[in-house]
Length: 194
Image 1 (cartoon, rainbow, N blue to C red):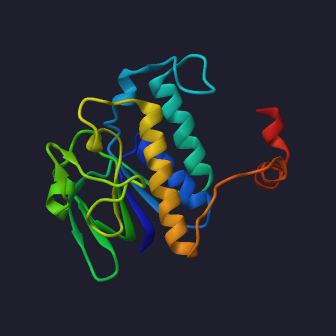
Image 2 (cartoon, one colour):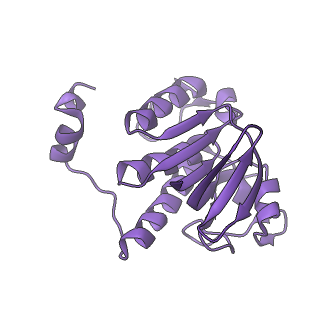
């Protein structure tokens, strides 16, 4: 059982996984590789001058993989249910369980509907932390916005969900703020070379 199961491997899902795993929670990502980022070219992503969406995605995948995220490439979620311990997500081949759930499936909202999340019109209703009406379940990106889709906003949604989960787990507001010595400890001084 993972701490956090994330359905979707685009900017929101991978960012949620990165923040969770980097800060001590086990994250599992179900990634069908169906993200719209493959159709994008990023000119307006902070810190990036210009990069093809698929190239950026590979960089982000490498980053989450380096922290040990269990990324199940090609695993498609077919159903989701709330359990006594958290959530169970069925796939074509198996099922994964986690105490928290982050839905990052773009505009595909069927899993949120199956889970019984409240909707505001056609979009999943969430609070500022991206938590849905189902305790412990989060929705991000295009799921929560009508026709307002953007990669950096989706990544921010994933970060907000992960930080709220970390705050819940730690029993206090959690801040993901690193200093240069943290990078040296994690990357062995290689951070300066990147």
